Amino acid sequence: MAHSWVASQCKRFPDLTLRPMATDWLDRREADLAMAIEREVARRWLTLRRLVDVKLDRPFDELHPKVRSALLVGSAQLVFLERVAPHAAIHESVEWVKRSLGRGSSGLVNAVLRRVSDMVDGRVAEYDPGARDALPLSAGGAVALREAVLPRAPTARLAVVTSHPPTAVRAMLSRMSERELRSLCLHSLVHPPIILNTTHASGFSCERAAPHRAPGHHVYEGDRTALSALLDAHRDVWVQDPASSAVIELVRDLEPATIMDVCAGQGTKTRQLACTFPDARIIATDVDARRRAILRRAVAGQVQVTVVEPDRLASYAGQADLVLLDVPCSNSGVLARRVEARYRLGGAALESLRDLQRQIMGDSIRLLAPDGMILYATCSLEEEENRLQVDWLAHWHRKHVLRTHRVEPTGLPGEPATAYTDGSFAALIG
Image 1 (tube, rainbow, N blue to C red):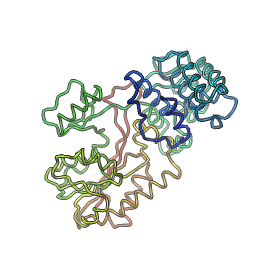
Image 2 (tube, helix red, strand yellow):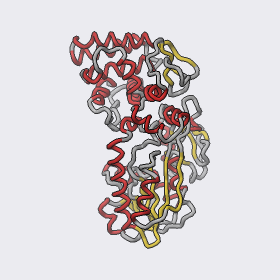
Image 3 (cartoon, helix red, strand yellow):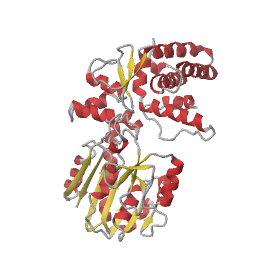
Image 4 (cartoon, one colour):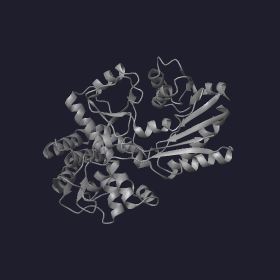
């Protein structure tokens, strides 16, 4: 199953799809393994490419997508998934290629994966950033390699071991120290925990939830079936990282009568707005029909919230005391959760997002009441999407940046889940 899914991703890379891999027809054990493989391939794509590239006698991108998939899937198991025996990982990849393409390519897959397997020298307790023969693990420690196959230059090596495009890492280094860069890249390897916003919960108690370092939040450590039951039982609790909830906390002291959530997505911040401002009228929408359907379900029963079609917003012109713009962005503050986003960082994609953000900001001005304010938010760390954007809005629409707040991602491999947070930016403009 994982082989077919990764083969389809090979045709798209670096634009990996967000659509989840379907595993409903597999038994629980097979589904869990397929998902684990898919996650590791996506998270460590460029790392695996490096290990495979040094053992190939032809360019990786010239290989058939199914051959590329077999090499990535097999290598992910050999290097990062301890519970899969090396001979089994190699055998499954070779046999899948035989079934898919015939025997012609199976010899190459067999030879390369055996060479990758021979490189692995077991696991060590700590990762040394200066080592050319070690790969950091998501849970802490490292995989030791028998060969120094990683780049000599520290920045290039960091890009490979954390699976970031070299151009993106160099761009990040231009605005932060080497230590900050290393922490940010290593943070992106962590498997992020499920964090609950319990700030507004009454009588919340759960044996599977441990208090997070951020007040009003808990880390959930049970299975997803039990989580669904928990959230159904506690409508005043929802999944939300502290970096996301900090956006609304920035304006907790305000008293808006009418709030418009223009990019509401699936309704996480909409629910937070409703709990933070129980006397406010909230109008919420999203341009995506699928997300709007989820939004409607998320706020069902909250009479103060009205979900409308995007083209209905015009009928509320001039009424908003507060407009929340949680705009589409590069996701550079949530690369641990949005692993595919790292492969699209910078360049034309960022310029396109910047233009879209400005269009959303400009279009939202008409919604404001005479003394209304805009709460602009991203889950990005890029100044082009954050401070420079709010400065643009303030300049061209004669507004003032009243306050800003930035959350840096925290939590490194091996640290407790309660130390984890995403990154975000928020600004109040009025």
